Image (cartoon, rainbow over all chains, first blue to last red; front, side, top):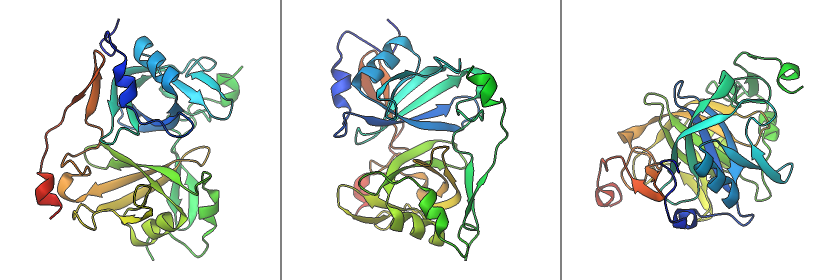
Length: 134
Length: 134
């Protein structure tokens, strides 16, 4: 048992799940402070995350649990788990294996910046996606 | 015209709006690096945000545009606007007037930390909500 979970699982009921039973989750790098990604969890994913200390999301596109890093190796080790004031959003402070959260090989998924009416892709690709997903 | 908008508004079409026509938006403090809140925007809110340089959200509870700070004075001045890799989440880098984003009078809405199966409220209340909303 780590420091997140206790004897009761009532803390799961404090989360306001949406109609699909999901809640949006922000992952922030504990060292760089960068917001790495926004993903979604269902109750099972949140419980598994808290129990294992590794981020487990719900993939809306694939319709299944997504153990972050299962194919890329880019596991997120969770150091802090926070819930917002109205209980409908979560924030994870993570240690990002490989320093890459995005499937494009970048540190963060938020690499498109708005500039004079266009989204401009910033941030270097640290690793070729072909070499991440073999 | 500020540095966000240009002659075309096609950048709005690059955002993948959900079934309700909304997109989740993360606001991050550009100085402290704290994730302040997660809120939602519709297309009009995003356009107004980009044009004015101040965060305008869509209040799902009230069903109307929410010019952040309109009653509290806690306006968010937007320095950067980012879209994620799959276009369904936004990140704002903001300068937070008053250093308070949360309606509870705290810097961030994410003040509940999971500890041994309980959400523990951290972070000081910087201003009594009674004195924020008169």
